[in-house]
Length: 124
Image 1 (spheres, rainbow, N blue to C red):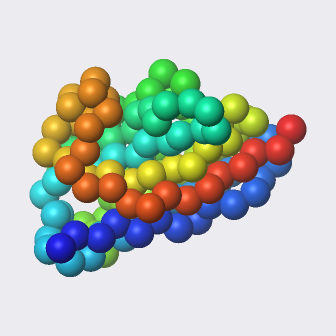
Image 2: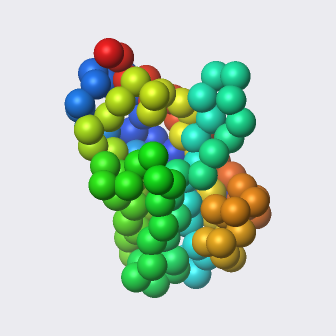
């Protein structure tokens, strides 16, 4: 059984920063691609960022390039999403995900494992 637990969400003013964390437990998925998705009210879930198991390859949605940074710590089996220069349109529930392919995550929005999500609210 695999569990992904997100933390770090909250309320922040536009221009501020937040760091989300995603801790994995249960069966080891250290060699999986890890990623982040988000879903705003009334909208479909969308890809945000992903990182390869080695940490050497990352990919981002165009809307967050230059503002968000994804990273991972294998020793802690934890993935992070550093979010800077936040905008009100970044308001959403953010989900951690684990899969075997960055391309699949980004192009189809699919993932083998999902977290429960953490709310991020950016006020104007």
